[in-house]
Length: 172
Image 1 (cartoon, helix red, strand yellow):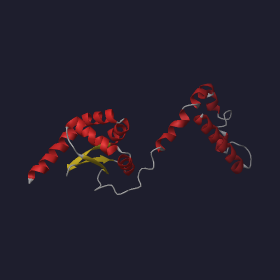
Image 2 (spheres, one colour):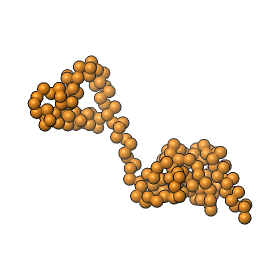
Image 3 (cartoon, rainbow, N blue to C red):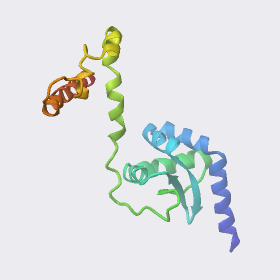
C-alpha cells in the first residue's frame, strides 16, 4: 500500500532535482511554455499520475491551463525524465484552480515600456531644457506655474497635450 505513494514522492523529488532539464525540454518543444513555466512556477507534487505545477498567481494558472501548455509540459517531463504524467497548474497554497475566468491579462505588462523608446533621442537635445522646465512645457503641466487665474481648466489642457504628445511619440 505504501509503494505507490513512495514512488510518487520519488518522482516528485526527481522532478525537483532535475527541474532545469525539464525546463530545457519544454523550451525545445515550445518556447512559450518554457517562458511561462520557467520564471513563474515551481514543481509541486505527484499524485495519481498527475504532476502539480505551482504558480504564484491565478492569472498564470489560467494562462497555463487554457493556453495548451499542459500537454507540452507533460511531453517535456517524459522527454527529460521518462515520466508519463498529466500536468495541472494551481496557485501555490491553494487546493486547486477555482477561478475559471483567469486568462484575461496577457497583454498588460507591456504598457510601461513604451515611453522610454522614442523620447530618448529627443531627450539628449532637450536635456538642458528639462532643467529649466518651461521651455518644454513640463513646468506648465503643474498648473501653478501657469500664472493665469484659470489654472484649473487652463491647466488641464496642457496636461492632456503633454500626455498626448508622449503617447504619440511612444507609439510611432
